[in-house]
Length: 243
Length: 162
Image 1 (cartoon, one colour):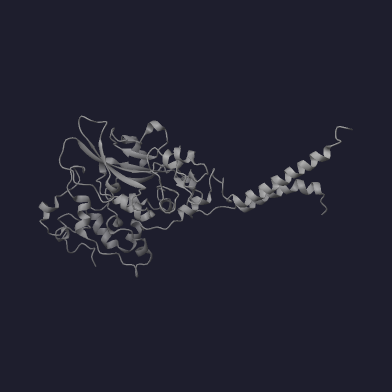
Image 2 (cartoon, chains in turn yellow, brown; image 1 turned 120 degrees about the vertical axis):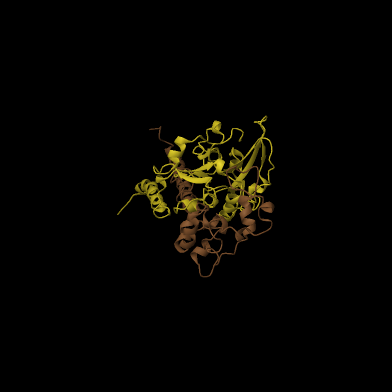
């Protein structure tokens, strides 16, 4: 085959494009798991939470979360009858070892477990300058630790305070909704260990998931709906004082 | 034609431009990960890597395959919906190698009050006790079998400790 210099110059870019396609191949995926069949979220049944801290301990054990940092935590609200807008909120060590005993007192108490809301239109993924954090095709907000620079833009952008910079790895870290568990058919570590069923993993693309009936029959909210983040952590009977 | 008299200069310049572009393309091919852009502006392979992280909690189904006797006791009682690892802790290593990895024995006294210590902050319908008044220092498991804590289940024969 005789190619002129000109023909080679024309062919080279075409060959480069083809070679890229050969290199790309197909990525590893968990067997029997198709990302397009799922759209993950979580249901938090606020009246069921007893503030035991099991979820916080389970999350730290499952995901090797360093001490003093939290992918999930529990807040205890105390709202007095006359001051809705200034509730007293405590979360000692993220609620990991439970809460101090509350004396019978005026007003109401309740616990609010918090975690990444796995927003569909997430502010944190939009500000990442290097494409290290993203919403996966099955609706989970993840961080690629090999790509993250640790610039902490996303930490500032998250309106729910769900991200931190890992003290040793120096990269952004957050709840993965136990992606390594849910892709294997297990539930998240926090939901697995919740003794009262206050936390439930939900798959919004699964027509048989009880979440659909639950959303129809209960008064369910997301946190900070005014920010239009597309949050997918649904709170049942959330009090208006929760921020 | 005078118009193309100096075209040679331009062609050399254009050739340089093409070479520079090909060098850029080649370097980019090495530097940008293969799966970048597969699903969006990120490295697609990261999804698989995050999904491959190790498990610590084996999950309730794993417990049930061997400990069906305890699970049956639990199902009949008030703790039916409390999963094993909620009290026993992460047991994926035990599930993978039951012969060599034995779960530690639990401190029942500390465990029960985590959920059942009386507090005005807890939901009113949830069973709570003031430990000092309730048992006067007697260990919980003397009266309550942890897997089925109702008083109708005799503490001795309800499975668990072996």
